[in-house]
Length: 124
View 1 (cartoon, one colour):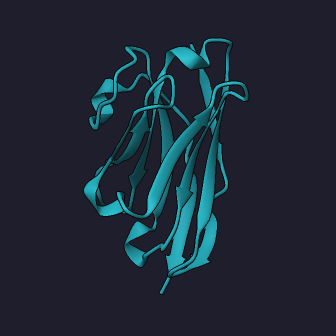
View 2: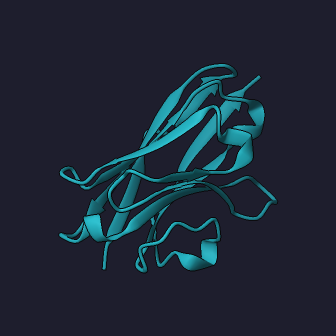
View 3: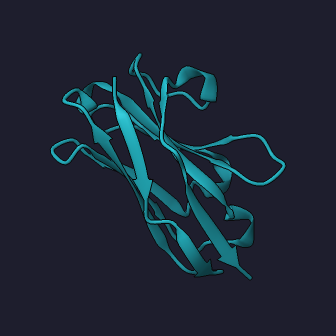
């Protein structure tokens, strides 16, 4: 089992940058594929990006592919989401998630553990 805590959200102007962090408690962090999802008011939770256990493979949702970068530091039990060129449509609560089955997936149903979320608001 792993507990996840996100941080780094906030208010930023359009075109700006933020880096989200997700700290994991547990000694098996390196055995999980990790992902970021987001949920805007009135919308379903959607996939943003995922990173493999080693950090060598990544997957992104098309609208963020050129702007966001997901990475991880297994020594620090932390996964990151660097967000650049932010747009108002990126406004959402951002969640990190862990996949116990250790494969990348854009489906929220494939993730077993979730953080509580961190709010990102982009003003235009």
